[in-house]
Length: 232
Image (cartoon, rainbow, N blue to C red; front, side, top):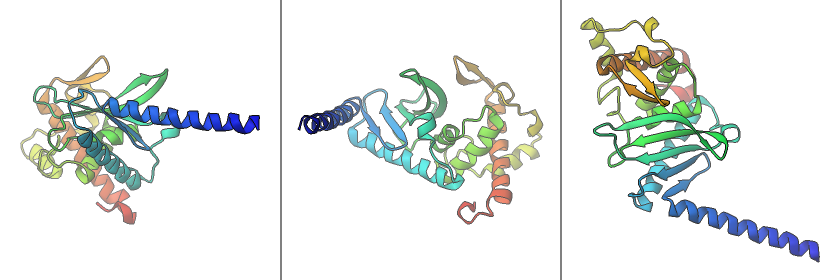
């Protein structure tokens, strides 16, 4: 009888702990899904809008995972934190970085600007699934995911076909050879400060991202698209 009582007490405590965690997340403007924890960083979004953005992010992630036949790697790396934030000045987009939470290293995607359809979310969720240290690999994988599953207005397409951008760069002699695009930020017209990227040369950044996206799309079409679920 004592054992039954103790087991029941543990069960009830577990229920209250679960409910308390859910209440805390709701109070903090957060929504938790199996692969994500989506948080309203500024606290100025309605619960419905946070839920809508969380569902959209999860749907995008699911499509990326299906494309690559991958898992979200929650058991190994924990859930991906998606922080909903305001634009930085006129800059809309998203940034992937690592953070620490409870002594554990966690993956974070900061979404900058959610008043309209968010930009670069598919790109940066791809980074979170496959966090390569090589920027060329990240962009070759991430930009085509944005083209396929994200917002066509997002950088670097800006509403136009990425191959058309690459052709225009070639015709205007603005093309930068892929062999110059090293793993770090500098060859991409960028720098890193406190682990966060910043743009130093916008024209070079745009050209290099376009080229990486165009090359990544070419690789997918010719070497990955043979899988029936992966046709571009």
